Image (cartoon, rainbow, N blue to C red; front, side):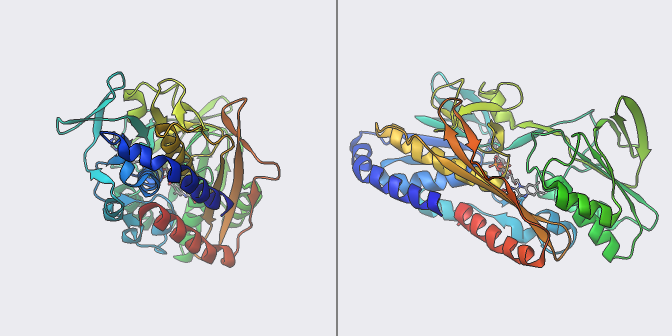
Amino acid sequence: MKRRDFIKLSAVAALSLTVPNIVRAANNPRVVVVGGGFSGATCAKYLKLWGGSGIDVVLIEPNATYTSPILSNLVLNNVKNISELRFGYNSLRQYGVQVIHKKVINFDTENKRVSLDDGTSITYNKLVLAPGIDFIYPNSYDITKIPHAWIAGEQTLFLKNVIDSLQNGDRFVMSIPKAPYRCPPGPYERACVVADYLKDRGLSVEIIVLDENADIIVEKDSFGAKFREYGIDYRPNSKVTYVNDQTFEVTYTQNGSSHTISARGINIIPNQKGGQAIFLAGVNDGNFAPVDTKNYESLIKKDVHVIGDAHHSSQPKAGHIGNGEAKVCAEAILRELSGYELYSAPKTNSTCYSPVSNTEATWLTAIYQYDPTTKDMKIVPGYPKAGTPSSQNFSDMFKWSGNLFSDTFA
Ligand SMILES: Cc1cc2nc3c(=O)[nH]c(=O)nc-3n(C[C@H](O)[C@H](O)[C@H](O)COP(=O)(O)OP(=O)(O)OC[C@H]3O[C@@H](n4cnc5c(N)ncnc54)[C@H](O)[C@@H]3O)c2cc1C
C-alpha cells in the first residue's frame, strides 16, 4: 500500500508538471511494450494511466487472451477452472493502450524499430521487453507427450489429463529446475497439490520429486513437513539429463551417479532462460537480461528496458513483483521522457501464495529496496517472511490474486 500510495503521489506530482511538456511536443513519444503478461500488461496500463494523452503506448502480444500461471496448480485438483484464469486486453484498450496481437520477431535497436511477424514494423522512443521465460531442455523431446505446464494454458490442461489418468500403483515423477526459475515455491506447491488430489481420489501413487537444487529452496519447513505427510520421495541434487518420450523414462544424475526411472505420469519443469526477445534484442548476459533496477533499463543497450521474469536481478521471478517492477519502470520512463530525475529509492514487494491441498495454503513475502552501489535491489532486513499452511491463508489467497489480476488486466 505504501508503495502504491507513493507511486500515485509521485506520479501525480511529476506528471502535473511534466505531461504538458509531452503534449506540446509535435509527436507524442511512443513506448512499445513487448509481452502482455503480468509485467508487460501492468507497464502498458500504468504508462497510459499516468502518462495520459502525452504518450503513445503500444502493447505487442501474440495471444488475444492471457492465461495466468498464478493459481494454475489449482486447475489440476479442480479448485479452479482454467477459464477463471484467462484475461483479455479490452480494459487496456479502454485506457488508451494500442494492443497489437502479433509477435515481435526482430529488433533494430540502433534505429529504434521492432519488426512483427506480419511483415510490419514500428518505431519507438522507449522499448520495454516483458517476454517471460523460455526453456532449456535437457534433450529434444516432445512436450505434447511430456508436459512442463510452467507456461499456463494448454500445457496445464494436458498435465491435468496426465494426472487424471493415473491409477493405483502408478508412479508420478516431476522435476524441479535449477534456480533461478519462475516462481520459486511453485514446483513444491505443485507436488503437494498433486499428492493431496491423488490421495483424495483414494489412489496410491508413488510420487518422486527430482530437484536439481541441493535442498528445498523456499519455505522448507512447510513444504518439508507436507512432503513427509504425503509420503513424497524427495531427491535433492537430482539433475534431469535425458527424457525419453517413447519409453516414458527419465534419466538423472544424483551425486555423480546416473539413474533411469520409468513412470506413467511425468512432469518435467526444465531449466529456464529469458524469453527469446531478449536474445533477439541483444540485451542478455547469459540466460537473462541485466538491468539497473532504478528504471529497469538494460545495462547493455540504452532505451531498452527489461521487466518481469526475463530480467536478471536479486528479485524472484514472480508475477506479483513483476507487476511492481512494471510500475517502477513506467514511472521512471515518464520521468525520463519529461526530463525529470529518476526517483532514487524504489521499493518492490514479492508475494507468493502456495496451495498445499484443496483447503490449505501458505505464503512467502519479501520487500526489496534499491541499492545504488550495485544498481540491484537488496532485500530489506526482516524479510523474507513466510506463513504456515492454513485454511485462512487458502481463502486470503483468492483475495490477493483477485487484486493482482484486476490491477494488471482490469
Ligand atoms: C504454477 C505457478 C504458480 C505461480 N504462482 C505465483 C504466485 O503465487 N505469485 C507470483 O507472484 N507469481 C507466481 N507465479 C509466477 C508468475 O506466473 C510469473 O512470474 C509471471 O507470469 C511472469 O510475468 P512476465 O510478464 O514476466 O511473463 P509472462 O506472464 O509469461 O508474460 C510474457 C508474455 O510475453 C509474450 N511474448 C513472449 N515473446 C513475445 C514476442 N516475441 N512478441 C510479443 N509477445 C511476446 C507471451 O505471449 C506472454 O504473454 C507462478 C507461476 C507458476 C507456473
